Length: 340
Image (cartoon, rainbow, N blue to C red; front, side, top):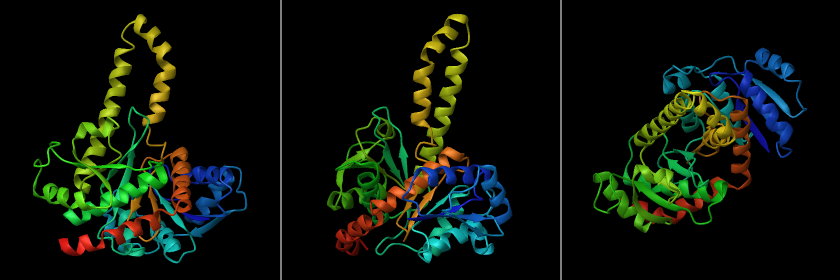
């Protein structure tokens, strides 16, 4: 298996990305070749700092980088020799089976859409984000921000792609799919959600109806479908809430000696909770619907996040995720024709 990595994307690139890539290669014999894409001089220096490579690392030079603050589409089109473009080219030409890219999410989506194109039958790609729950079974939220404006057909296809990811990668045998709305009743929601509800009732997924925001963390649904605008707001709000709760806990548990003692007794559980809710656990989210496996990492990805993101790309290739999505698109083809 061959994996391409944009080694220049993210707040801590290339150091963290190279270190994570080397960890992934050393721990996963299934990776026969890993392409590090970026400034060759900088990448060789980082490889040396990390103790050298195992002989399965290959550097592909790219002279440019699409920065975190740049316009995504404009940056991808203007900087043809950027690391994100060169990494996507490796998947496009089938030199690589998958790509991992941290950093500018918009640039990764734009490059994947322009270079890889959509899988047959797919209208628009969606980012599938695995969100932790107290029940220890992650909920897949799709779309996390790739497609802000959606039609009912696009949302139905998100449901099919999200269910495929939940089943093949996360391991849910028959994932339950819910549609994000403002109430669980069928009549609740705006025009888009009501039309989508009708399509999902006939779609080749286990549709359980509308769900609300609190259902994301209760573990009674496996896939939650929404447009990319709503999904991104949910993700950013959840991250902010988790950060705020952590600060509140720290403040309250250090207010007096008794609470400090109690916090020491709880430290093991708190560390476990932090690990379960960390974005490093999965390392990234797949961009579903493009003709190639593409895992997008968080802009703040460290070495562990990069390692896990690369390993997630390996799992997606091994379980033939895109083949499952294509089968789902074939099953809903007649429904799509009738709806358009």
